Figure 1: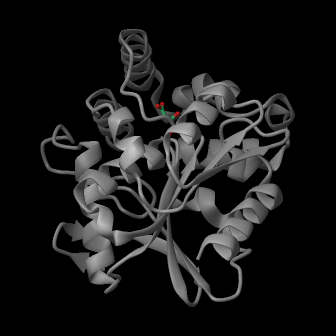
Figure 2: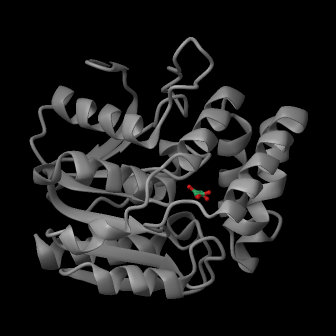
Length: 265
Ligand code: MLT
């Protein structure tokens, strides 16, 4: 679909009240396929590809230097306009959570509820920025495959890392087909994102915080602290999962999401 901000791509399933699910870095809307296969009755799940990822191969001609988390948020708000959705349950996993915070800052009234999975409100620390610079080097030298080699051990819990595990295979496939320019642009966007800690007490809609028990990137203790700061929120820890909790334990994640939708909306 052509939106005010360019061509948008997304996956969707179900019919009814809209739920927008935003993907992690450097994956794509495909990571939500397990949830799209289990949409509860009465709901419509919409998983956009963020700019440059998946089917949304639409980067600015300058090589992506203008990509920001606020820009991804504006893209998703434009997609909502194109789909004629005034509001929705909006959320995402990790980088998708960063985009959700940016959308809430810009347009809180478009949220009927929020989902924050394996994410954090803080901006990057100086140490995290050093790690991102290293990842950019790996990308320049070895391409997306090198990025997958470096990131997968941190993205998945031990069980998910086993050769042949669906989550490992699926996450690797998504990373390896990502456009290098999109990966590089997203790294820049994450480095530049603002701190959202002060936003947390202002998130007035029902909010589900989800975290994998063994998440090494955004650990459960941090998710607990985030949940305590959001007034109308609940926390679900997904047993046995790492950072990509929805891919590693799809049934448990879908259950948590379904229960939340049923209880709060
Ligand atoms: C993600 O899963 O989106 C990334 O790990 C987020 C990050 O690197 O901050």
